[in-house]
Image 1: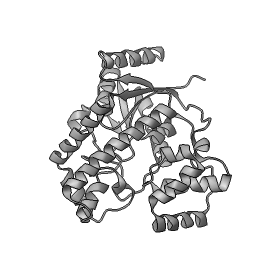
Image 2: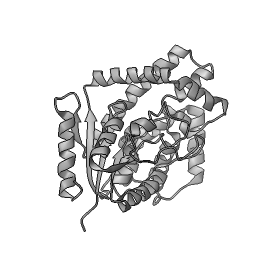
Image 3: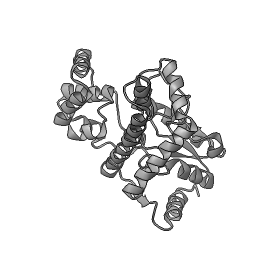
Image 4: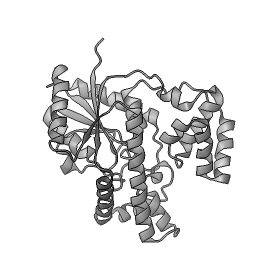
Length: 310
């Protein structure tokens, strides 16, 4: 049976995925599914770089502003809701365009990954939580790095819940977590991944400018409102929020918080590029090359025309 098409735009933070996605959707009649792990949260707009209503230009966007900041959001929840969104989009004669830089979220949709098959062990989880509280996130992440270097590369040390889950799966099955999640997973759709990149220093300068623009747009006030509400948990671990929480907690100066925000954003961009380069079949387009955008549009048009969409 012929698989339905799914196009995804991937790449590092600040490279221009959102703007390109909207342009493609307007040109080819698509609706956008956000593959960003933090844009699901309401009131977290500036720090997650959500497109404004004006920027969306009337293009429907899915999986944005669907949770409160204190709510839990997991890869499996994303997978379930994104599949429902795709079915809804196709029922209207449109095609889905996935836009995002959270690698595991993208892969959970493009491939038939299962997140509920491995058993669980609550006592082991509690043991790992205690270990993290005593010795720190980096020490816990070190355990994962020894047991499964590929999984450790893909999971940030501060994502304690996911580090523990990876260790739990390894503990119970005796197999690397990375192989079980990513191994030989079959493509769910006829996937086309468009990777966006640019020269590293240019990207880093773009990230620094975007942080400055976010601060001018009111990011400090946005985070302070969350801080005053006592919001904690998963959402506040996002870059742009945890650094300013540290400032409000008196753990650093304002300037130190901004520098940490920029540094962490640059490091995250590097991790994103590494993930997609090593663990996806993306076709890469260097945005500084002449006619790069025209080449992307031609590439998408040729693919959709072959599927009867263009």
